[in-house]
Length: 221
Length: 202
Image (cartoon, rainbow over all chains, first blue to last red; front, top):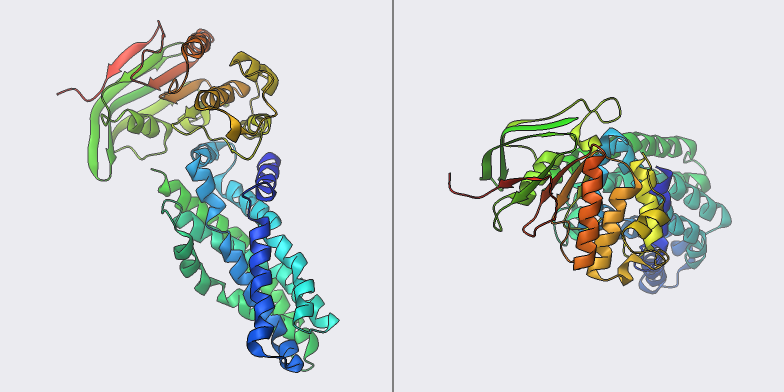
């Protein structure tokens, strides 16, 4: 399983990998917001956490379609499915999700504090948003894995995956953003939404790979 | 170890591609599946591997032992694609499959020597020619041990010398008690093999 993790992380940083694409898309989204909203620094600081979360969510969806499709195209997916007796397929999917998160999504979390400066956010708000992104984005990857597994056989399934996955990620977005706001706005709580966010990630970390494995198992042809 | 198929049928897209296929292979035996394009050779192999559901019939592996309880766990499946990443080097690819499959047998270097690719393990897989890619995929069969080899057009793209070398590898695998099911329309040079013709009337 280590070898699969290392292979997928290595692939994401080699040529054609998704690590940089997501970060550049994230940067593009965040950099255009101040131009569109106007130079109202207070407003930017207020909407900052929400914009960072939406940007990160969309950037997450960008690379998801390649999660299983790349393996399917070169035939690796057949062998991963056949390996079910030695490495349970759900576990294989979990490892692929973790590798995808580490290779393509973690760069977004790392870039988020820098992009928070574009939005004139306070250090505390930047810290809180980065922390909620760190805890919440794995949930998006796990949901996305189900979409990617369902659409694995479709050419150009990327858009379909986004449409399938986006409604399911809304709870993650809501709790992520409300926890980020809770850290700065005084009457709002931080801990409660943050814990629900963590619970969502843990829950989807189990459900997502199992569902994706089921879809992959029946999707071979 | 015995691989048994009885009255096997397979379908693709709701249409029967083949039916009433039966064979029984003991350890050391090989089956060469021949037939015109579209007669269901690849489908048969994928049904045997368990990648496609069988439409009818029975399929079982006897005496696989604890190590190989099912066909999927006992087989190497070599499909049309080579299951290698073009961005990684040949050695990285093989090392990954060796660790993922377990039951390591030959070293990556030894396996590459055996298929005549010694000294090019550091190249990215994407730089290799079609025949070299196929040989690297064949090396994948050697780095970890599986008693059952399911080979789909294994010699596509190979030159004469490599074909001969691969025939030797298959003969040795059978001599060591392995079982081979190969779909092909080229002669494989396997002397011990029985032939199963598909797609004939009746």
